[in-house]
Image (cartoon, rainbow, N blue to C red; front, side):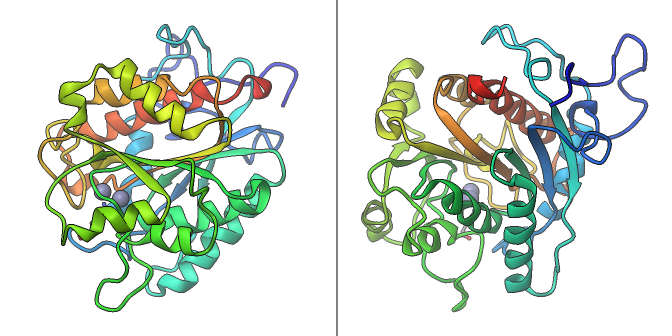
Length: 315
Ligand SMILES: N=C(N)NCCCC(=O)O
Ligand SMILES: [Zn+2]
Ligand SMILES: [Zn+2]
């Protein structure tokens, strides 16, 4: 990290709507190769089962992140001051060969992370969580996965295909990447294929905080449940933006009614402060179905809160 981290462009000098379209108007990695924390685009949606379009997610979220400010009063944290955050651009993935794309994402993420960097990926569809988890597992061993989603994403195959946006966490569990005693889904809701979906997901290592639990339990109780499950393990946070209600995130590929508000999601994320969050992704933003940047703005704030809860030692 440079002696004084370079933060976002100053919005009192360069209007927010002008200038570079990096995340939060941060510097690029190419200009600050010593950066500690990277925001990285993974424009890929070949794994989508319904509406395509998450390949356009990274630049949409960047565009929607122009209004973020440097101080987070909710946590009393300045995420861009005490360490260098940079935008690492986008990975060039093959849209026609899913296997090749997954391999490219794994290789590129591994090279970017090195041994110390923390990476927050902007998807892309949820397929990308698998190669990203492989990279984290290589560094930390089995990972406590905190998975926000309307969907379990522990299904087996679609049309016989093993690698899709509905299957990354089954593959990850089968590969031994997931800490079976410390992983949890948050926000699960909507019709399933069968009763067995839930029991199988549990066998694969995930307990569940259902979306309907938010109607009955205070946020602090939800946060305590999540923290108790994660324990003190290295945590990977995977956030499918469809965890939010379609009213808060219409721009996504497989929307389900009855989801979290953005306020609820941001509060749970703030509750992660102090945990060892080793990496994260925010996926399934599909701008073609968005309106007035509603979904992009939600995703940008989600990434901001993630940056704010990264461990102290990086700051
Ligand atoms: N990961 C996301 N967003 N969706 C999975 C939905 C799987 C299905 O089409 O049933
Ligand atoms: Zn989902
Ligand atoms: Zn998902």
